[in-house]
Length: 118
Image 1 (tube, rainbow, N blue to C red):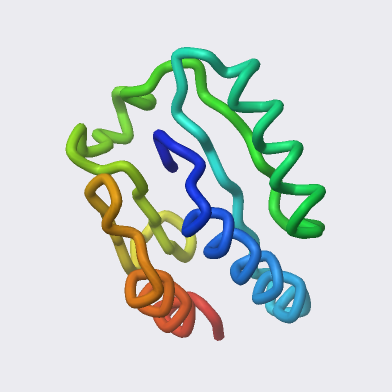
Image 2 (cartoon, rainbow, N blue to C red):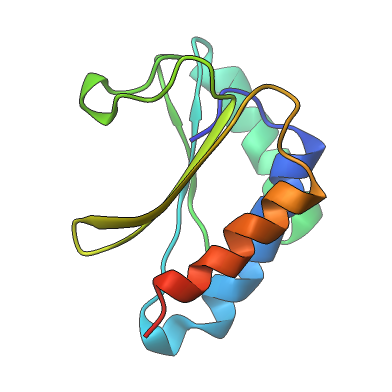
C-alpha cells in the first residue's frame, strides 16, 4: 500500500512484477494499492506506470481513503507499506516514511520474498 506513486515505488513494482512472473509455478502473487482521496487521478497514474514499466503480473489498484482500511491499521507515518504473507501469516513487514523507499529498501523487500516462497 502506498500513499504516493514515486519513481522508487515504480521500480519496486517492476522488480516484484518480474519476480511474480518468474515464480508463478510457486503461486506467488502480489498487488499494489494506492491509498488516495482522488482515486481517479491515482488510477490514471497507475495506468501510465503499468504501460511504461510493462507490468504484467501485478494488479494495480486504488482505495478511496488515504488512511486505508481501518482493519489494516496502516501507519499514518508510512508512505509505503509492504506486507509479505503466506496464508494469513505475515512473514515480513516493511514500512517506509516519506522519501525513505530507496535502493536499499527495495533490495530488503526483494530479499524477503525468500520468506514466502517454498
